[in-house]
Length: 396
Image (cartoon, rainbow, N blue to C red; front, side):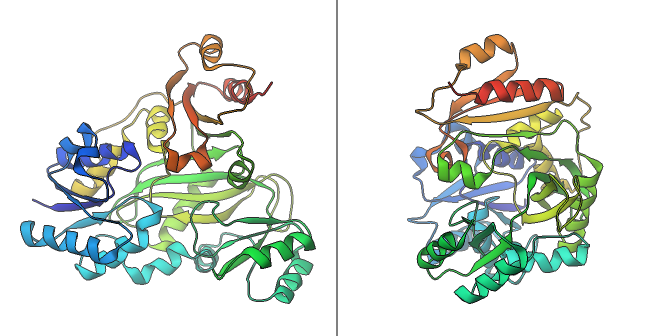
């Protein structure tokens, strides 16, 4: 029996599905987390063969000891994953220390975590990306801005989400950035006027996709976080060929194998330095599934079970089920507490009968980027999607 160590299997809460499908496929599923066993959901408990609580997942020695315990008790660890951006580097270090060769090692992380290094790979793939400057001095920033013009975006070279991100519109903003950025290495990039689109895929051990889809983000994550505004995005009904082509090129160039991935691109809204309106240019790679409820949305949009597809990839390196259900758009709306909307949830349900399929409070750790109360809807046409999103987000 193969041994799979799942780091932090309880967050997000829907991740128990990954564990359940692994166990259904005959793997021994071993969880490591910093929540007590009593706090785990009954579904997750039923999906794990054993759980080891550590005082903190931030403490590498503690997590190392947990993996060592499982290795001593059950033999060689075949897989170790968190499927979580925050733990990717630690996952890779643990694979090095326990000779686990089924995914990325620590030496690979510079191209996975550092935005400046990603650009080297994009160049090899022939995909344009934003011009940039690794921030050293105020004068260097000014020289870069004189080259590309305002606005510019500054963010940690190794960062997650929109944390620590600045939009710099003028010299006063630049001075504020330099005064407050701290000691972290920052990358400054030209501003791209584009809509964020994604290529999401489950890739087998040969680098071939077993499943492909993608989303469209209708709001800037930076603005959602900074302005505490509502958020929205949707899974496409069908993946455009140009996004599929770019996504597969990045898979090949980064040497991705046996992973669930989420690659982000800009679709240009107008002609600009990087290309013409409608062109697709690189933003960043994420060597893990799209976060939060995105896997659930992929299931609704594509009539599939991505948890099972991922577990089948791990266990058998192939699909074990054919999926031929009709496709839909699946839209996420995350509303902020305190904002007054024209339509209540009940009013939306009445106007769009049978379309809202899930509604629930957002986990506190995710609410900064996603809003406080979320609901998902499946829509059949682009017109219906746009009308629904306009109504769902309309304020009084």
